[in-house]
Every structure is written in structure tokens, then in C-alpha cells.
Image 1 (spheres, rainbow over the protein chains, first blue to last red):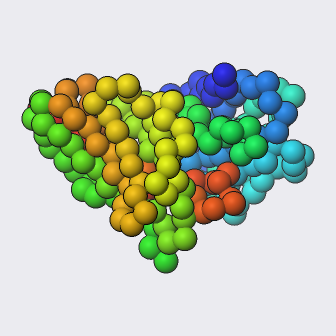
Image 2: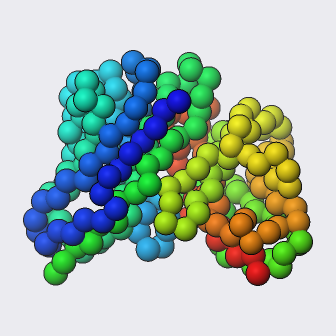
Length: 117
Length: 114
């Protein structure tokens, strides 16, 4: 069974600085999807970024980028030029390919990011 | 284009009562997923449904919990005879047909059992 581990319960970053959130996972599958979701105090789950395992290029969305190391099963999220609005819980999630017959996301336990003014 | 809608946003029930949580997927989406989030934890998968079919209910407790997604109307997650341990946030997500890799989440329903 797949597992997702986020070893940093809480992180802090100064406004305008860069922060990296860690995520590791365990799987025997060769192809899959990885996601980062943001959960602000409103508790709405917001998709931040998505990575297909078969793509070697790291995904990027504006100030958000990932460092995907497939062999190491690592999927970290880098937030550049941090803003106060980035303060939230961040969840890493794994999803098997649809062909596997499995449709669920497997979530990590989350990292709470605090942004200091 | 409205996102995934859930209601109610907050629900308070006494032990033994029934809780009904509703989810309207995004327009054009025919796949619905329910997740539960306990305090200070990540989301845990409960059930995956398509119209009129339960595809995967491997995460659903065997008793008291049921889900449906009828041909017309929202998906319903029903919890009978609620207990304090059912207190959690329940999230619904949806995805379009033929493109299930990304799920779009609703705002959640926070259930409090007194």
C-alpha cells in the first residue's frame, strides 16, 4: 500500500523569503500523480500544483515549484517570495493511475506554514 | 462556473441522531469522492461514486455510514446514529469523466456531535 509522509508538522518563513516543504512517499508503482494542496483557515482545499511521475521536468506554478526526485521518492514544494496569504496547512497527496483501478488520494498529515511579517 | 458545493457547512447533531451531508459536483463532473478529516490530520478517503453506482467504498466504516449519488440531485453521505467520534470535517471532491486524476474539492461540512 502507498504511504505519504510529511515530516515537518510546522514551518515558518519570513515574508518575501523562500521556504521548502518536504514530502516523501512509498510506492511500488512506476507511474502515478503527486499533488500539493493548500488548506487556509477557511479549510477549503485548494490545488497548488500537480506532477505526473512520468515527467522528469519539475512542475511550476508562478511562485510555487516542486523538486521531484523519483528515485528517492521525494516531492518537495518550494514557495518563493512568500506572502502572508500563503499561510496555511499544506498537504502532499499521492494518486495511482486510473488504470490501476484505484481512484483515491492518499494524503500526508500536513505541514502548517506560518508567514512572518 | 461554480465549484463543488457542499451543504450544510456546519452541522450539529446529538448522539444517536442522523446526519445528512450533501455534495453537488462541479458542472459536467460525474465522479464524486468523499473524504473525512479528523482534527489535526490529513484527509482520509471514504467512498468513490459515479452516477447511481458506488465504485469504491473501501474507506467507509461498515456500519452506520452510507453514500449515494442518484441520477438526479446531489450526492448524499448519510451517517446514522452518530457518535462523538464522527465529529470531523467531511470533504467532497469531484472530477470530470475521462479525467479523474485531479479532484476538485468542496469547502467541506464540519460535523459536531454533542
